[in-house]
Structures are given as structure tokens and as C-alpha cells.
Length: 115
Image 1 (cartoon, rainbow, N blue to C red):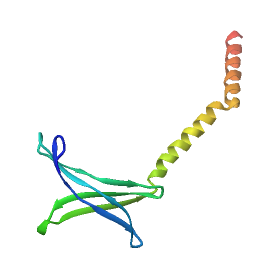
Image 2 (image 1 turned 180 degrees about the horizontal axis):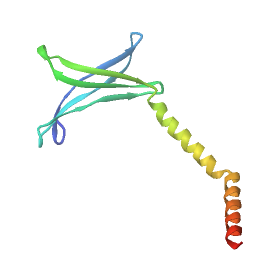
Image 3 (image 1 turned 120 degrees about the vertical axis):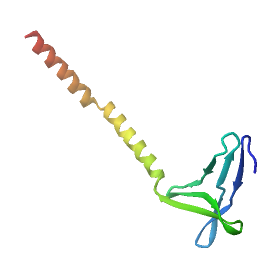
Image 4 (image 1 turned 180 degrees about the vertical axis):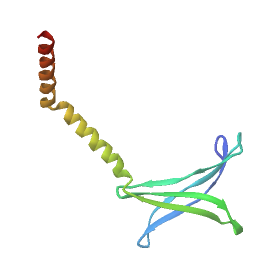
């Protein structure tokens, strides 16, 4: 397979669960024409319960390839945690108690300077 500035070998890895196919992932091993450096383009399947990463290794005897498959559970939930923290920060900014405490402290400081 050829791209605009690279040549690639592309694999097709079928992911199955319980013997039933779930999806097909297509990792690539690319060689860029300018630098002649091999680069691996992993195929990633994101889901609510985890991500599947598939990357091509090096070709081995008989036209086969070494393949690495990783399953990372709950990776997507990290982003959910970030959204939850941002929401909590927004709620804290909108809380009147913090604004009234800041005004009270400003008044106390102004009174201390005047005295």
C-alpha cells in the first residue's frame, strides 16, 4: 500500500469475543520515503469498557508478522474523571460561600489598614 509520502504494509486483525467477530483492526508498518525510517501505526479500538491496541512488529519467516495486542481496560474513564473534576471546579467557582468569605476577608484587611 502506498500513501502520499510512504510505503506501508497493512495487516487485518479480526477481534472476536466468545467466538463471534466484534471488529477488524488494520495496523500498519510504514516506511517514509524521505527518512527511510520505519514507523508503526497502531490500530486502536476504543470502547466504554476498554481499548484494544494492535501493532505490527517485524516480519518473521514464512511471510508472517509478529503482532502485539494490548487490552487496556477503562482507559476512556480517565477522560470521564477529567470531566468530573472540571465540573467540580466549576461548581466550586459558582458557590456563593467562597465569594462572601473573600469579601469578608477584604473588609477585615481594609479595616486593619485603616486602624
